[in-house]
Length: 204
Image (cartoon, rainbow, N blue to C red):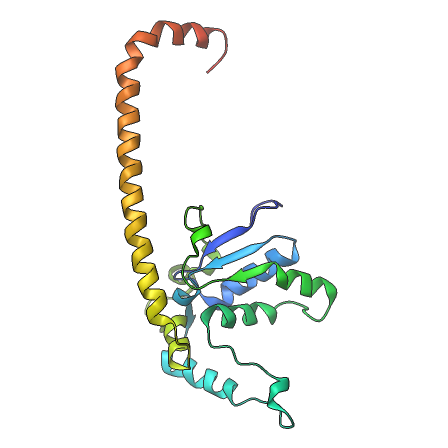
């Protein structure tokens, strides 16, 4: 992870293994970093879908015998499932652990405030690096949808719109860069003499 900074570490969780990514986020949060995890629904879990679904259904059966409103609480949204897995890696009953957990946030899709921000990946958590070829895996969004998450289609629609807008913006940016490059080439012969004088004085 990078050195300490007040800026949040923004991770695109697409094709990351959930457990591996949770360990990285938990450690960064304990070290004082703010962590934002985007596209939680495209995170992946090792093992077949059927096996993971049975494990989750087993978890859904756990309840307080006296009053189920006391917990445990079974979140269905991918971001909440991920946040709970991070919580399990933190001493969340202590002050330090609670503060660390507050520094971790997860989202389905990419919220508007993070759409124009540079995102990172965690190489030690990428499925293509961590999981042996041929091993089974499943997507967290599908698992959530099967156990009661209602917003899979909504997130898919918003993501499709975001990708179209991003591709248009990227096309405009490429045209602008090309125009700037041509302008620099056109003006270079006229400023070459001055540029050499500036460089001889030790400036770039």
